[in-house]
Length: 141
Image (cartoon, rainbow, N blue to C red; front, top):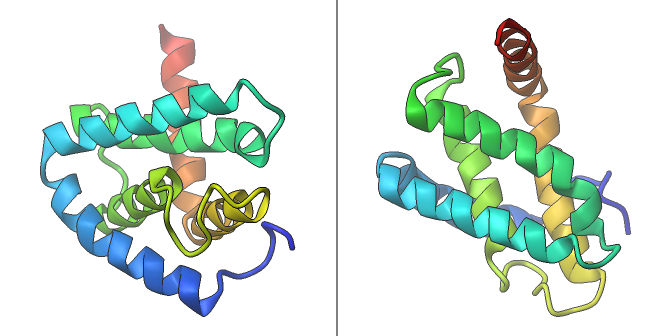
């Protein structure tokens, strides 16, 4: 099983449910901040082991920075629909019970990675634009 595969029907159904929640969260800045805090906590916990989540850390942090830029208004070149689906991906990531529960060794993490990698491929251009913007703005400081 690899994170390079397409999401299964079950993973896509769960992601669809997360998308419905994400639409509400994107319009509620406090809830969006709460999601970013929970995602950061899960990433910090993952740093304690050598899991797939740890390897996904840089990618998830990029998504979090992009959403933070959207949230604080410093970066608004991302379509709303992209933000909604990336928020849905983070919800999928932090929810312990999704298509494959996280307490199931390895498999529970692979489905998280599969969904996030798939979203990354779908929004590759948006993420690349943000990363370029971030690099230009970091070099100006």
